[in-house]
Image (cartoon, rainbow, N blue to C red; front, side, top):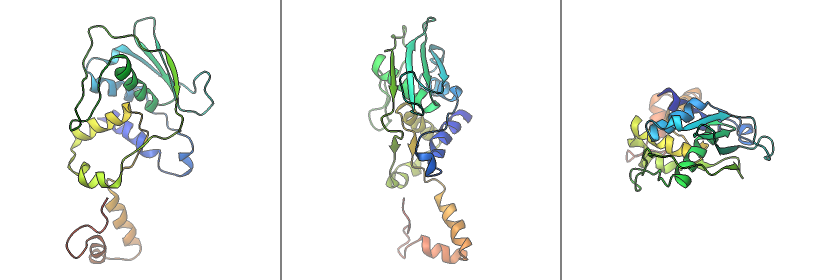
Amino acid sequence: MSSIVSLFSLLLSTATTGAALSTPQLVGTTAAAYDVAERLIPNSKSHFTLSIVSGCAGVAANTPCFITSNAADGTVAIAATSASELTFAIGEYLRQDCNMTIGWPRGGNSNLFLPKTWPKATAATRKRIQPWSYMMNVCTHSYSLVWYGWGEWTQFIDWMAVSGINLVLAMTGQEEIQYKVFQKFGLNDTEVSELAVLSDGSPQFEP
């Protein structure tokens, strides 16, 4: 569980300040990326040799990127500038070279399996054209994610990771923050409740 929390923290904390949004700075760990591969396909992480590097040859400094190659020991070697780039590279290898599908349970699900013989990786260096790949809208939290348990969240976060998402809107717990802000403005519980709920009982602020 700790690795998925670390991976989600990496996604969330990129949006903490406006200054941080200029270029992704958080690196993460190879362990988190290995764990994503293992959750997607049990017993698969030994097929990958992952490393985090400061940059990629031929790519401008501070540009998120990854290099995929075939190691002498038969593994797929991926060197990337962050855990986010590592997991995206894993996803690209599974989709493009292994002909697998990584989907949502309600959208066709996935076609993931442990191959008898792993295909060679397409050797390539890839970089982000834009530093941030954003996902989510405010309605999704009320209409879909409100019903998610830890299993669904794990699956969803892994899907974002292998899809290259590195900036996600996360509104979980926002009501607590709003409550504390209103308290600091001097409102009591009754007054906060009146602000939060309309006369018909529906939420005033609906993500």
